[in-house]
Length: 239
Image 1 (cartoon, rainbow, N blue to C red):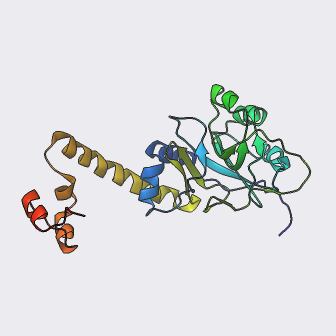
Image 2 (image 1 turned 90 degrees about the horizontal axis):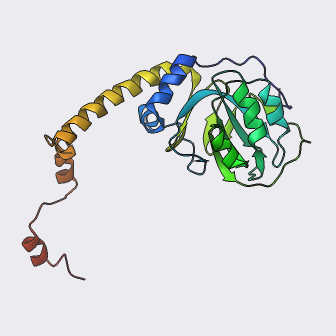
């Protein structure tokens, strides 16, 4: 099927796993997945100190047209996160506080969009978090068909309906639905390791060079330890 569609019965990642991944955060989950799944840095939060996670309801819209966001609201349920992309780049303000009001009433956790958003002060005041490609008051029309709950690409990352999307101050990361449980286990292991590292560094007991075994690598790469006198004698410090 290649025409415009609204898919109504998507499979979603387990809600408890999605929530747990959200607690771990974008950077930890990205690293736990082998440094994959990260949305490009052009998608930025309009607020600070907020971390959310949810299962993706996806929208593919025409540039400058928000018709399919209206259609997508009906497909959203508690624990979802709306993810919007357009068929070609668009910074128009396709989303504002009225959409957020409707989505919040359905338990939607937030929005990730490649488009622009507006009413940003209102969105922050009402506690509806957004990660967007732009902030722009330019209005949109409702005239062109698109699709809901199909795979889309958001700043280089593929998002499929039902995938887990985590968003915080560091950006946005996407976890494929079928890998969510395994990624959570890997993220938990990373959290445990980082907790031990943090305790070691905080106590002054170890340096990261030693704890991570990096001294041999420095030597292998030809990095020398010299005194300032030795350095200056070799002429390395002069233009």
